Figure (cartoon, rainbow, N blue to C red):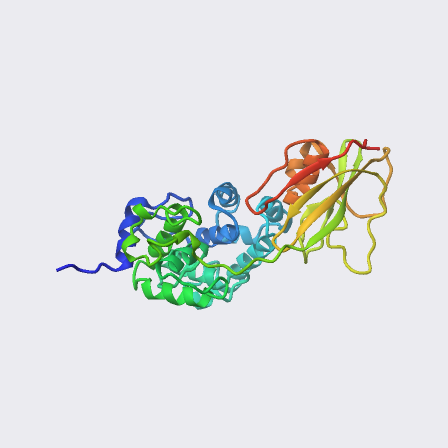
Length: 362
């Protein structure tokens, strides 16, 4: 007589042998990791792949090893340390959340999913992940990997994002009463290493016999609604050089790239304001794709004489130390274009090109 083994049991057995070794995790079956490390990793991993997050996580936890240390950090230091990860509202929420934990919870993360959801920047998924992984509390954890695995397991025909409530409900039906943290991480690992978006390795999947998409076209799940083309925007950025320094400004705290150092630009210029009164030669452009729009950023450059001042607030930053300024990726590309270096390409962006003209810096 055959015995049906629950999906959770199969998956936890697989996870015991194949769990990824990640710096914010504890080994399968062990005591839960520090909730601070779980929270920090989950915020960093939003819209960003594991490989890109690891070095940032290492630097953050070395510099700010506790939530209290992060709560007392200078805003500008945290924003600079975050530069390159993208989605900069996460960094602002990171500070707000750390300070709320210290102020309202005595420096300890609250242990329940409901209480965690009251923290700044902590939504339903993040609260469930911290509760399950950091406190071993039963919670239903559904990220992009889990959505893909569950949509294939149950052959869910409703396209994303409309299928999200159904996928949460189905995940709830297979989440065990205990070891839900290990189960959540096992689902993530399965989606990352076996049940991948393209060419899933179904023959070695521990859940192959349970998967309703097996034998058809697993890669076609989850179904997706037709994507609309991203809106196109244009703007100008200025490289203003003086005595081997370049002018940087601090962007407004609210809005796109809030609080970050940047080159003067017309990016997201508020209604009723005018562009900075800079002259200079157009020397090229970059294309940068944000989450909700595609930006073509023209670069204008000029060199000023010693002692020449400008009618704008800012700071003169040594060009040789520009990599220490914590520029967001779009402006790091501007610097790379001007200095004719290969621009960085974090995992949060795509479709980047540099098209420098022959104009000289004046």
